[in-house]
Length: 153
Ligand code: HEM
Image 1: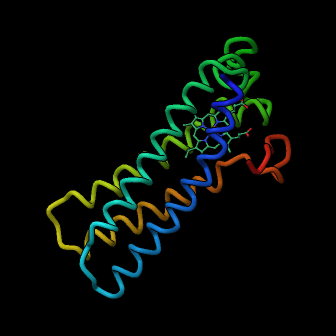
Image 2: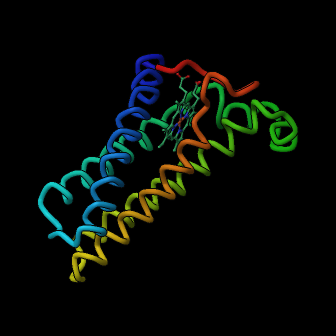
């Protein structure tokens, strides 16, 4: 079960990245063209949020039940984990960065439900989704990253 969930967690990154790119593009064009905030805009943000929250839930499970999160802190101690890049990344940096990104996605998606002008909705979602995407790209263990790299899929 752990391996299956790890694959799901890994795959969901692509869903999040694609949806975030679509949502950012839609917000940017909506903002510059001054168009109406449509059901499509709402749905893109909603699906992005659902994908991010699902990844969070699976990630929490991996962190609690797997060898790279809580287990390392328990077995080696917090100090030792912080000293070693590979351990520190999965036990602390990855979860912290992703939590911030998911909070930003949730706030960005919240703009769609607010009683504010459409231009303000586009602006808010654009910035929140853009910053979240940058954090996600910086916090994914891409295969080319020394010591922490994992497969593309
Ligand atoms: C947008 C959110 C996230 C993305 C895109 C993401 C992406 C990834 C990727 C690509 C991997 C490598 C998977 C592989 O080895 O094939 C990974 C591993 C991992 N992630 Fe995340 N992650 C996210 C959020 C989280 C969160 C919030 C947590 C913890 C609460 C978490 C915990 C972990 C752990 C513990 C591993 C290592 C699991 C292992 O190798 O046994 N992730 N993540």
